[in-house]
Length: 262
Image 1: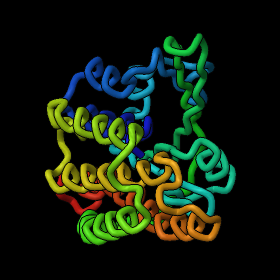
Image 2: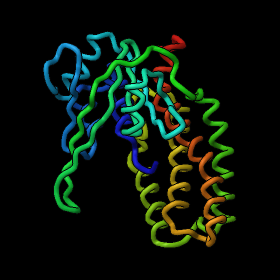
Image 3: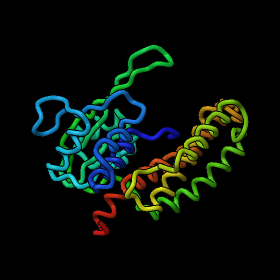
């Protein structure tokens, strides 16, 4: 959860483009990020894969007015609404983008090539039909903010109790990565998102940081199998809350559309 999901970048900057707040070139550049290229396959009206700029324009022509994010995990179809075929593909990818205004969804397939340290990454977004229904288990921004505040306290308490909170090179690297991200112009979300969405996403990323530290920094004070199982059991619901909040933040643009704010 330290890294921004590709679905989050595509939805956030796609929404900014749909709102007329950024140019197509800027939106695509931000959505692609550090990847080499993104293409879209299966788009209605297109016989083969197309570039992201053309795809976003085509989606707008098809009636798409906003983009949502889904971040499903086993047993938790977060942000999905069906049908089963789409849910299965999204669960395999652990993320998806859902169109608002047209019954379509996009699931990424990632291709990597090249030696360590020089990996070339390309992404193909597969367009599939989706069911037009409320997304599963996505809280409002207000609910997400309240849940996150409590989750952050719980995560800190668990890490402290299990002696994994603050030492070691992995923990230090994770904290440095979070701080570096926070200092990069504060562009956590694209233009057009409400300030509360930015706060919620930043807090979700901080909770995700703590979870990552817990899982990556060895076993800490949990030395027996029972203690390690207890740590995982304690952290799992916190991780779930952070994912729900992350989705709520990315989906805030569409939430405002549905409330008639935009």
